[in-house]
Amino acid sequence: MRITADHLVKRYGNKESVSDLSFTLDNNCILGFVGPNGAGKTTTMRMLCGIMPPSSGQVFINGMELLADPVRAKQQIGYLPENAPLYGSMTVRSFLRYCASMRGMGGKERQLAVDRVMESCSLRSVAEEEIEALSKGYRRRTCLAQSILHEPGILVLDEPTDGLDPNQKREIRTLIKTMRERCAIIVST
Image 1: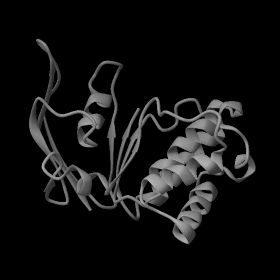
Image 2: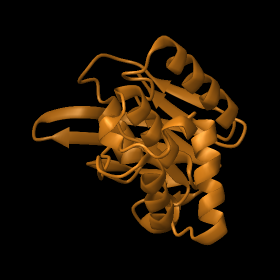
Image 3: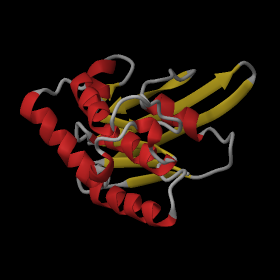
Image 4: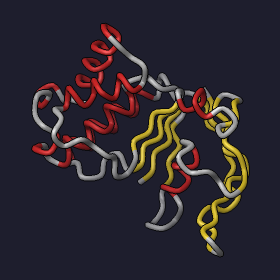
């Protein structure tokens, strides 16, 4: 799996948030975006996932131009946004089942995927709790779980350990290292 950014630029009026960014990231690699608030990390991640179009430049997923074939390209991407939306009245399990259904999974495939990510993200103990009753750390884990349900080839994580305690941060970092064996990972912090 490969993701390529080719001369990405993002402008907001006269302000250039991302300036001529190019890179290629292959499977089994982790790329970190590190910088202060306002440096363009989240904007770049949104362009890489096809959520926000670049002002100029292109993104390629395994050679497919993202904006030319967005559905096929986005099927290869797992995305954990900085402020991921959750449905507070749903339980963790029902939310993950819903997300899996939106990814086209059903029946046994959906159940296996939900069980796998609940185990990977240490969510079994809160599976039947409503999301709004969870700590920030468990809500973040739930968001991470939805991003890996479909076993993406490219994983884009915007501040994945935000709000987690030191033990949870260590667990998420270990999970990210494990996932590197199956995909290319982009992480911001």
